Image 1: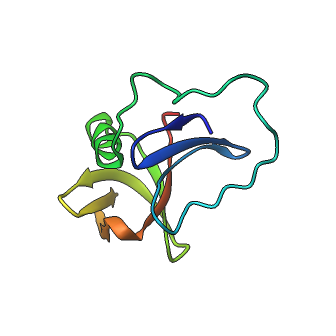
Image 2: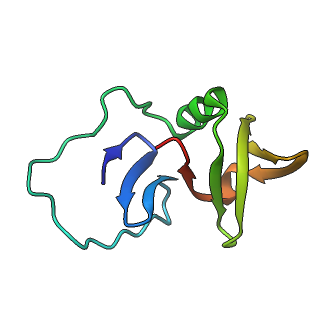
Length: 109
């Protein structure tokens, strides 16, 4: 666990950084190695809210891999709406309700 916000977290996973919303139903995180140092909330400059983190990614304009609760993966830039994101790549756009976002992998991290 690299960062914990009010309603999201960042994990340093085997395949790279993963960011995900924290809800009543998840995430379930399997611990494979305990930290050798004391805990902290992580990056002091990271936003506290999931939507704010998504807005940071929108402004950066970097490609992200967005994983949905259905298991589908979309790669593109994100545009954040009030209750959804639009994942856009090569002229194709996908409307994704916030509740359908399982996790994302920012390519910039």
